[in-house]
Image (cartoon, rainbow, N blue to C red; front, side, top):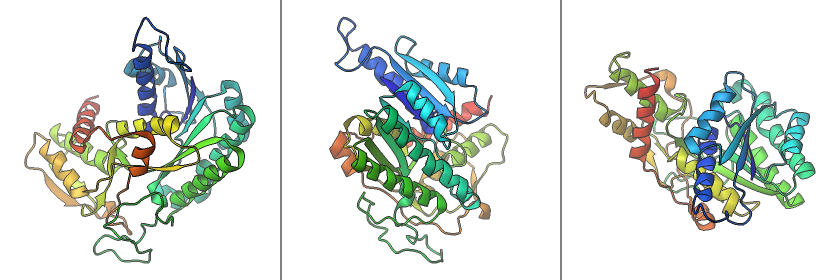
Length: 361
């Protein structure tokens, strides 16, 4: 099995590579005296594609192997490439002839997308088109997973209390399904909606097996502090270590979101590409909503410091914010049998422990 993961050096990509290796290791060792299941080789080959200069790819590959299995189970490689360049993408896919592609690489910052809309579209749309055209030409039997976003949905005017501004009305009491209205409200979401529609249309037109996710908030160990849960966890860890005053700076915590642990996310991605229906779109979410204030309270309760104060930082408050955003994962469950396994407390504990280790380095 040859697998290509774009953006493998990112938060989700690292967890996905480790999970795929671990799963393959378990398959290989289900019975040492028997052959592996039909169609599954003894060794999985994973190639990550990234353009970043700040990653030691050799160390990354070794850590992915150590976390997931061993050299008997997997080969892990890296190829540095600019996915916006058709020639770069075509060469990688021609040389590798992948059986599966997980396209995770993206420009995913909403604020950056307003500052650099052209680059956002080049990365999020044109790289996806390059992948599909190269697969059609060089590896037409390959299955391709595109990770898109719940930001595509019509949630712009599902506003937080006290928030004002133009937008689209929606019912904050209902979970968002794959049939919910699409109405992206920022350049990042628009770019993802564009490749979402292009990929599913391309599947119908060419027969290339394409699977699309609309992923909601996810979190877990290793996530950047640019995201709310990891931001809170890092601040708690810094307070415990005595390098920060016992004050957590927050934005608007009176909003509800749908958080799914990254380890459940990557299981969903694998289940979709292996068991899902080509040409279909799947919400990847917990199916439950929880307030950001509850998340904060849980993290504070996990801390050894009990006199932590909370301070609202105006810089962390979005000018427009949705009050309640959560998804319906019924379709994902029905088509693949996937179920979330890691509850929010476990996810928060692991995230906090990860930051405790990180700040000691």
